[in-house]
Length: 157
Image (cartoon, rainbow, N blue to C red):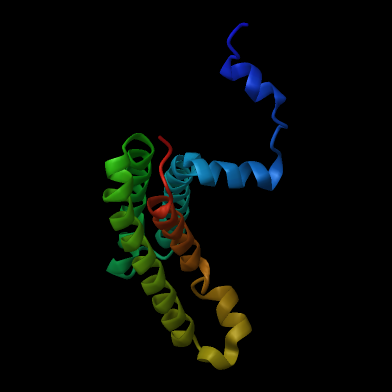
């Protein structure tokens, strides 16, 4: 009797689709690398967008440079997390936590900017449209959250 090859066994298993495939990738550790890569891409995209938005404001506050600088750092940490398990468990969570802290700080600074517009919070609709985007810094916080989640998840063997 011949040996049963691993490939033939895999063919008999039903193909996983949708959420079942995602759960399987999380269970096996494959999702950790994907999330690290998404963190890298998200960091680059948000840093670029932040640069253009803060450039419109002429970088009037020196803190406007921080998320622009953290973007490439998050991208490098995300790529390192894809390539190296050690980096995924050390460098990536540090960069991600820093990005989260900066996103929360940015939300505070943007809220302060809305309040400083004429009429402050009483003129909320106008000041939200014309002032700094109040919730935009939370988007960069989500990028940091993806990096932290990637660092927590199990790594594929």
